[in-house]
Length: 291
Image (cartoon, rainbow, N blue to C red; front, side, top):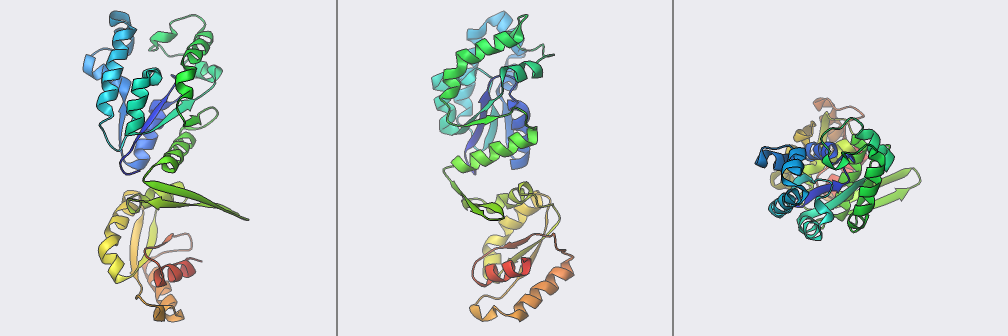
């Protein structure tokens, strides 16, 4: 996900802002909330814009902002609930990246918005009925979006994980294949720029930040290790680079013993990740040592 934006849309109360912030923090990206941008530009609360200027004026502001944000790259965007009802806005945002519609049931949305006073479209006695009616009005627009993630009964962290996994799967720059075996499954992720994201990928896989071994050879270390090491450090890991010689002749117990000595000297334990940066001898020796 090197260049594409991640755009979160969906009905009010589905968690676009809080999930967007969580996704942005995990990926190290800028988060943009469209409603906040409009409020900052106009100096008015959204409810005041509706009351003083009317909903059509607000929708015009949204359309202008969609055009502006569609020129951005690698940002996380939370739209207003009705921003992508417009086909033009949907097209603009879809061109800029992956658009994911967050969903929840009317009852759950009503519960989440029970005390909200900043929702001009819910200024009615029966909020659940109003929510249901608005959701029906927008159903066709939301259905036109190919990617949906339910937030019902999910924590912010769980929804953020689902959003990131989905965004990776549909990223034109990345290919993700899941391998299933008797004891579980794992993902194989292929694409550009992944070394810089390796640390965050490891964290989401359940590996605790701390010491981590990077096994490589001198040639690969010189050209590629810096990006991987930087990404690991950004995610809280403490990478230790260990070199093995290149060539089939070094697939020996002596090379393995040298790896173990380096691991012990660096303070690694059985829970420390071992990363193979390279193939051949590097991959075989690192895999055997990790096992």
